[in-house]
Image (cartoon, rainbow, N blue to C red; front, side):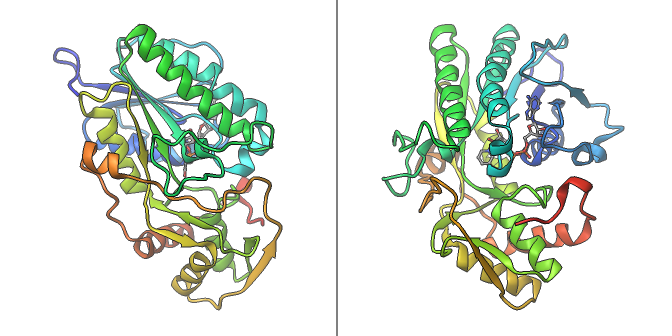
Length: 328
Ligand SMILES: NC(=O)c1ccc[n+]([C@@H]2O[C@H](COP(=O)([O-])OP(=O)(O)OC[C@H]3O[C@@H](n4cnc5c(N)ncnc54)[C@H](O)[C@@H]3O)[C@@H](O)[C@H]2O)c1
């Protein structure tokens, strides 16, 4: 993707102060883009962007994207990543979650249209719900409970996908959708309830690792650097308008195996506490990434143990913030 005549390309990233958004800011800056990062700091943190202070190519915009907003400077690409993403966060903010992927998606799509920019929506493997097809290809329509507590997130993303496709079909917007499967790495919040930060912070503190259910449910975990590279390719390659891609790591493990790996890397004895399974918790989740392999030339490269090692190193080096208390 090339910038407009002579000027550097500019990307607007919503959710820039979050886990994925902040890594995307770093990656686009490393590729010589100018970046406008918008965030209302609901679940993100200014410290995730503190290292960019003084970089004149980066501008932070404190903005709730469910409220109308404009960007006066030219924008070439919009990445809509604002949205509470951990189950703990979206169960705490269900109405906001529905708003950010409906009203917020509408505002960012309108902004992309006004700027003749390309658009990329951050969707999720949750659109497949508790899948009855395994692994999940992009052509699978999903198995979602529209009334359960998780529906605020799952249905918000399904609506955002429909709205994105409507803008593509009705307005010719060059829009793409990424369905992200579980991703982990530095800058996740210790207290956000997602399993990898939870296991790591508990193991580092020497307290039992909380396992929901019997721990035999499977997940596949993608290291953040791999995901960001896939997103960059999907956002910048030409000829992908109206396309949806799964991005994730197809290596599938049980939560018990994950707990064993974390405990062995932290060099602590494996000690578990079993908790009830949340409602509508998917039993299995694994991306079919053949489309990304063929269309983007992308596959994850960081093995789970290596990604876990880097993530543990990061968690061990940062003092938990006030809102990042370790909790089960
Ligand atoms: N991390 C994953 O494994 C994963 C998996 C699937 C999909 N996703 C999607 O990727 C995106 C980012 O996820 P993440 O893991 O970085 O989550 P995160 O909670 O760390 O980041 C989300 C960011 O959005 C911001 N935000 C929320 N509402 C906003 C609003 N109204 N206006 C402006 N900013 C707002 C938050 O403050 C936060 O900084 C989300 O859309 C999520 O659904 C993530």
